[in-house]
Structure formats: C-alpha cells, structure tokens
Length: 410
Image (cartoon, rainbow, N blue to C red; front, top):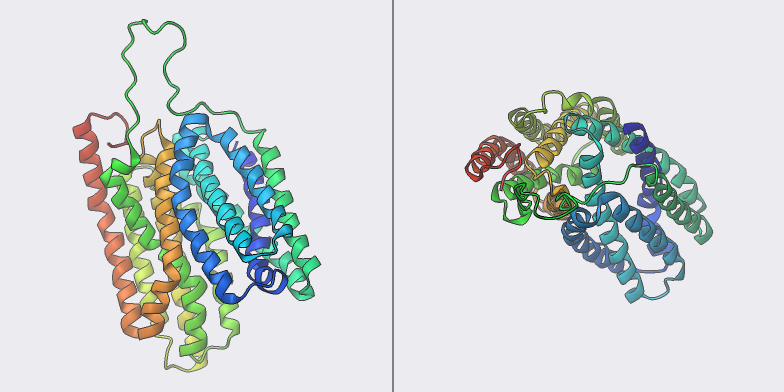
C-alpha cells in the first residue's frame, strides 16, 4: 500500500514542482497581469485554501476519501487546463481561488485517506516516507521547469502547466488502485435496526475539540519556518550578510537533503502521545536555535557568514523533521477515528494559515528589525514547541472525562 501511495505522491509532487516554479512568471509574463494583481490573487487564493480544507474533510467522512479525492483531482486537472482560456483579471482571480481551494481540500482528503488505508501504527512513518518522496519529486519537477524558464515564452509555460494537468489525471487513475474506504460515519450494521446492539456514538466535532484546536494553532506557528526558509533567509543573506548570493541555493539544497535523509528517522518515538509531543517540542527549540544562528551571520566576513547560515539551516532542518513528525502523530492520535477527514481538514487549515501569514510575519520581524526580530521568532518557536506537552496532557484528560476509547478526544 505504501508503495502505491508513494507512486501517487511522486506523480502529484512532480507536477506541483513544475507549476510552483513557473507559475508567477506564467501569470505575469504570459497572462500579462501585474505583480500587484498576482499578489492580490495569491492572497485571496490563500484565504480560500485555508477555508476549503474543513468542508472537504467533512465530505470525506460522509462520502469516503478515495472517491472524493478522485473527483477533486479531476477538477484540479480541469482547472489547470482552464488557464489556457484566461484573458481577464476577474476570471484569473476566480480560477486561481478555485484551483487553490480544490488543492487544499484535496490535501485534507488525502491525509484522511492515509488514516483510512494505513495501519494505525505505521501512519506517521509512512507519512514521513511519502514526504521524502515528495521532496525528491518536487526537486525533479523544478529542475525540468528550468527549461521553461530559460525559454521564457508562452508555449514553454503552457507546456509546463499542461504536464501538471496530466499529472493530476494520472493521479486520479492511480487512485483507482487504492482500496475504496468506507465513509467514517457509515458504521451501523446493515439489516434491521432492532438488533439490540448499542448505537455507535457520533464522531466528535473537530471545531469543538478545544485541545485539538490549540494543537492545530501551535503546529501552525511552527509552520512559519517554511516562510523563514523560502523568504526570510534568502532576503537576509542578500540584504544583511556578506555571504555570496549562491548561498541562497545552498540553503534550499541543505534543507531538502536533510528532509529526504532524516524525515523517516525522525518519526522514531512518536508512536505515543508523549513521544510525539516531545519530538514537537525539540523541533521548536531547534527552530529557535536556528533563528539565533542565522541572525549571527550579519556583520561577519563572507566565509563565516556562509558557515553560520548553513549551520542555522542545518538546525532548522532537524527542527523541521522533528516538528513535522510530532505534528503528524498528534493530528492523527488526537483525532476521532471515525472522523479523520474533519480533523485533518481543521489541522490542514492551521498549517495553511501559518504558511500564508508567514511571509508577512517574517519580513515584519526578522527582516525589518534584524537581531531583535530574529530573537522574537526564536522565542515564538521555543514557546510554541514547549507548550505542546501540557496541551497534549490536557487533551488526554479531556478524552478520559468524555469516556472516549482510544486516543481521540472530544
């Protein structure tokens, strides 16, 4: 099963790597929209993406994850093809919001599918393996996209977009090889309703599960690290250090290599709630250390700046794999086993919010204020990481009071 999911993830991430690399230039240089218009579109689409995961997850619980994911994947393929017909900004805005919402909804449904088709004890390790595969595939897709960037014409950009559309269609076909899953709520036995067996309880509502919501917020805070790597560190290198600009590429390479090599290993010990919360806390502390190291790269010779920045990125990479492993485990283990779609939708909304707000927060703190800004980020990561353990204990107590079996809480 993991091998089938890995093939599906590779195809999907390869297409995403293509589009992620060329999309902004395609929107500006081919479709002809201004940078300001694209910025407005991406912001609006980000908001739609945050909102989309929750209803998509609930639909997955009602209709079944595999079938819904096939539908969403086909819609995403159609959305990519539709970019060919875009001529006006309103249509561009509508399409970008729709495609982003579908993509975020599909991510929530995909995470619910993992919970349904993977054994409980292997979910997190499998997620780690799939993330490593995803990083490799994105890198390959981005490398191929370099050809389109070099050509820098409409035909080249459209070819990349159409390849992405084809990858979604192929993913829909590959999903047919995944066993169909039963909707989470459809658990009553068929036949006459007077069998005398006790009725099944209704799944806990994710949006009313206060401990789970706090876990989601803390995980969302640590997701700011992605904006730090993609936006904050590159701009810091160029604006505030003597390190050569090529260091920016080295930062992304080091981060990717560490995730590919260490993500599966980082899941060790996360098979219990306390183990997962410890991994998350350690991840937060390592992220805090990385902020302080990166800040120290300013005002030193070029060679020292390179060493310090790459050391900071190494700490960030270790913090990333630990915080992601701990977050995944908690997102599954604290969820109701009969409503993984709804819970994963909420959890993904927190991640999406952190990723959307990240660039503005990073630029408004570290880049605007230098060392004090980096110190603020370090404190934010450390406090959020350390807060996870008491929140998880709260979740355990809430679950016991509610009389819920397993690790899900209400």
